[in-house]
Length: 345
Image (cartoon, rainbow, N blue to C red; front, side, top):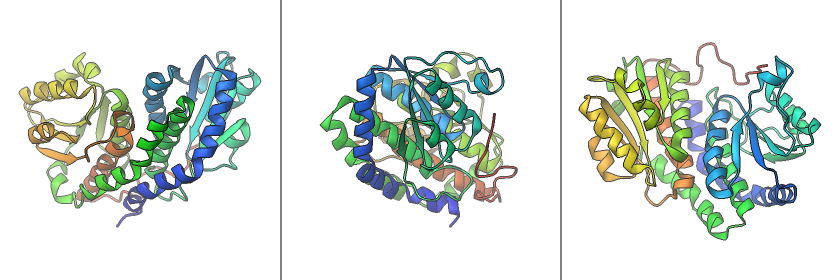
């Protein structure tokens, strides 16, 4: 078993440990946020962490009525002319906490008097030192280049912070059931190599998600790019239909992330449009009707609340990407030209 697949399978335990050991810290940070009452949130991140930030845009917007924007780090590091962050909650999300551009945004936030928070797997990192508050992921060492367990832990940390801000016992109960849901998703998607072999020579994919799982579309597409070197483009249904759908014709592979929730009818309608164009449909879903319409169906366990579904839905996507790399004769643990820590300005 590859290192990345081993780490994918650690995710239920990682989330259980984060919930057990990180709740009190999340609640302390939430109390500080309520005291300062920021007007909006700015999140600085790159790569998989940037996809976690996309989740936060829906999470904090829907449950905490906080507008979330994604930072533009090069404004601070290259142009030296970033916007004022006064009155914001500035969050840096980074597995390693070492990328200078993410650190620079938090440093700018502190200079502007903003409340700053680091969410990182390395609580002694430069990012953690730059922040006023730190929420450690506690995922343990992640040796594979492609981030998996630190991504889901980042989502979990953001979900915990949102629940703590709302002071909702019901949401904490839903979080408590999450590790079992992750384990069920793993057990329901075993031995995918033969299933994905039909895509061994694919050169492109579109990956579609909406709402909370817009982030999942970006993350699954990234994993496919990193490990299989194909062109995988993430879209929402609305963005795909505003032009790019023209490239879809017979046999074009499309992976649709369709977890139950408010956006499920939109995704079902999109699948109809893609089927009319004779696309090759892959679906990640807990809906029997959706799975029946797909050439390849990756099953999700039922009963996961929509706001937590990205933590579950990403797992079959990760397993799909790893299996695809193997069937193409590639080593998913050693993506060409990549290193575990990328430091950018």
